[in-house]
Image (cartoon, rainbow, N blue to C red):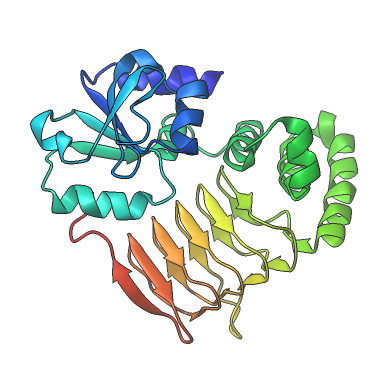
Length: 284
């Protein structure tokens, strides 16, 4: 896979790489994307006493980082913001990245086929048959990406018309309104189908995850939201108007953001929304 090749080419410049997290994402990363030969050890504060090795790589408590400092920490956990915060508080002077940041090393968002591939990787936690059965909302990604891909070339325009019709049919069935003029980076994930609405003016970064019963819409003046990279929007939230959500943000359930200006590395929640937690004091 080209993702694994790109990641491991990038990692060659580091001598000592550590994974933080010993759960499912870490195991998936080692199986599909990371070469185990470049990982010296794994850090996990909960599993270090229960499971001593993954793929013959030893697991230690996070305090071990101070004894054996790495060049790079790859965070393989859904609690990555808390881990970023802990790394900063531990005053470990080293680089750290969320595993999915490595998917974007050579991606300019222009190739819709590559974007679709990353969508599938971000959504997939089972084989393709189970993915289709358990997460039918992936068809929204497929028809969205392929419609935009085929539209670019006059020779493939008939395929665009087919996928255009398929897209809006799938959107109607799954109750996800995603206009084709929405700009969305790779890694777009619909956690569940059902009542998700986007304005056609919306701009979404990479690895945006959105839960059910959410709206990304305009205000009365037509202003539309801009959402950064690695943003999770939990159920029942409404992001409206000229709202700007920065990278590495979490939007709490049942929140209302109207013309809100956010900061990176934050949790935002409430009606009206406010910044509830700032994870990092300085830029990473």
